[in-house]
Amino acid sequence: MGTRRLIPIIITATIAGIIFVGAFSGFGPLVMFMGVGMKWMVIIGGVAAGLGAVNLTQIHGRDFLRRRKEWWNSLALLVVMFGTIVIGIAFSPTHVIYRWLFDWVFTPLTTTMVSLLAFFIASASFRAFRIRSLEAGVLVGAAFLVILGRSAIGTEIWSGIPVIGAWIMDVPNVGGSRGILLGASLGGIAVFLRVILGIERGHFVG
Amino acid sequence: MFGSPSLPLFILFLLIVGVYLFYIIRARRGAQFAIRPIAGLSAIDEAIGRATEMGRPVHFTLGMSRFYPDTFAAFAILRYIAEKCAEMGASPIITNSVVTVHLATEEILRNAYSRSIHPDAFREEMVRFIAKDPFPYVAGALETIESERAAANIMVGTFGAATLLLAEGGRMLGPMQIAGTDDLQQLPFYFVCCDYTLIGEEIFGAGAYLSDDPTTRGNLAGQDVMRIILIALILLFTVLGFFGANQLFEWFMR
Image 1 (tube, each protein chain N blue to C red):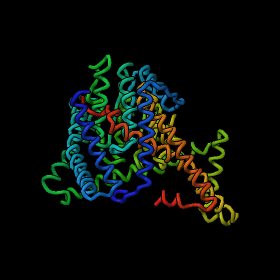
Image 2: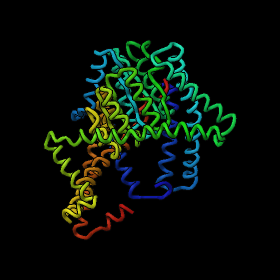
Image 3: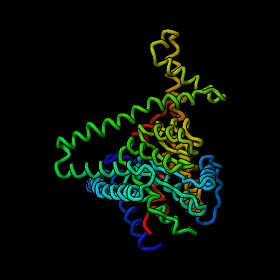
Image 4: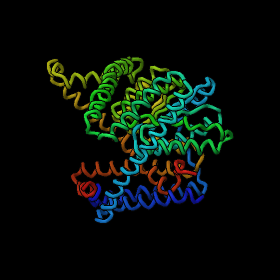
């Protein structure tokens, strides 16, 4: 294994070891180091954000210069991105122009995307609740009882419906969920071990 | 957990790591372990084959995770996709929402292509950073799937509140969809919107399933043994609890 790969593996294993021992022992200096480590993560993330902007500029700059399909979207993205960066640096993120961009451009666009969820939930639910098999039938039956159990009309129809709805949520639902969580947690620890042992190293340079 | 000593959890963690290491060593010494077929992972070959025949790209995304275990599991899947695409001549497109993960995915793709028979086929525009926030990211990812006419959309990870937008939006655009996550809140969205869904631990088994590496297969066998041990512990605590002997359980959970 080359040095270029060995060094990141040693750093990963050392940091993971310190965090692991600190988490279980509660030993003051190690816990303090964990706090410092979290700050490093924020700093590295901040530096890496610049690389994200570089990637966006490369991809969309190329699309614009080569006049690829819908190149005007790439141009709009670059103008807005650099415009926001310049305004943020020249003034400050609390400046009225920057706030205006955030409150009256970014927020409405994001809200528009969120509002689409209502329609997507409707179309996805319609597909989920089509009874084409026994399993789908059981799903629809359970969902129907849970919905009725959590609405006033369910109690009006029969006082036992909320009890059945609560049982579905608390017993089969929780049992199944915990089974999945148990497997996922074991898988997560396995990945952790593979990373600190250097078995999982495809993301390293070299 | 942080800063609060917990001896029982520490013992359990050491037991898990010990079992995993035992099976990793066994695998390295030549022991063979069978793996059950996982439809979602087998379908990746089908998706890439279909994309190659159609001359269209394969879109892959890792969600919003920042180097969590599921991110590393997704890396194993990405590595396989990159190697297959490089071998078959298909074009992968990876869109990212976390910059640090973006850099790692670029490295994985570059490494996979440099080891392939077509090292020159790698292009930097195959890996694209779109946006940090989930909704702008999903808008950009869907635009990429549509404009690039992706034949397959493979999603490993979650996008928080925007998961359904990407999964259902992707379904409407028509590519074959494979998704996986260990997030219970998001799994139902993938079930209704995707052709194949990888449930929880299946994404962590991907590394072993998609490669011939005996070490990861040994690791997977260790997970199965550990699962049996945990089920036995749960049954033991249940029986003890039935007879009113809860002391061991209370010590374990303190």
